[in-house]
Image (cartoon, rainbow, N blue to C red):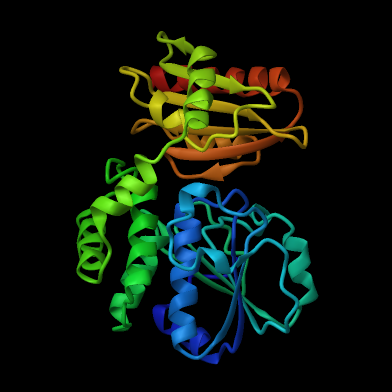
Length: 320
């Protein structure tokens, strides 16, 4: 396992790079997308040739981000000398990552904030902060980079999203200070918040209705879950964010059936229960309070398997 590189080593990599590819995990969220676009903006201003490749095109929640149209969902064929992988605890989180093997001489750079990062790249810059957006903002501040309004907007959106509007426990005084800096540099907090959180469609609410109607609550052990069988309304509102409002519930889960026969499980918990331990047991990962799993199987099989393990974990937690 490679150690975390220093800020100086990362900047040296920036300087040495000429033709760059930036990518991130599948189903990219606002932290992944905003961070990719902000890093691209910075590197282009340094005279670099930069492409952004994501296996899934971001959902329409990201449409307001400056530069969103530059994203490719098919890997652009160029002779990359450096590949930046953002917001990914392991290379396997990048769908079709095998395609990167055609660039054996390219330096792989891992920039991430997840506690379970596997340090899979040649250069690993890992900081346990709220988001990659916060990590990059601090980096750019430290090196006296010029923040364009586009960069500030993308980075503020990344931080706002991954902190849940500054409601999560990953928010620190440093997070808030850097968000304030981005506002000084041109990010409009009211507009960005409205575009992310108050711009939902009727399909979003159909998805929410489905999830809430199928929700199961177990007050004794303090968990709630719901299932979304395929095909589900193709909305982008996160049902789990609403479920988290439940009083006296420690863990929330959403089991989402995908078209490829896999089940995507989102997990959220309240401090101090470590939901990442549950995720790791099934080959997933993430943060202590927010993690994810992807398993092959039917919705019923996966639901029974994960809920059984969760119940055992919650019983052990309660008996401590």
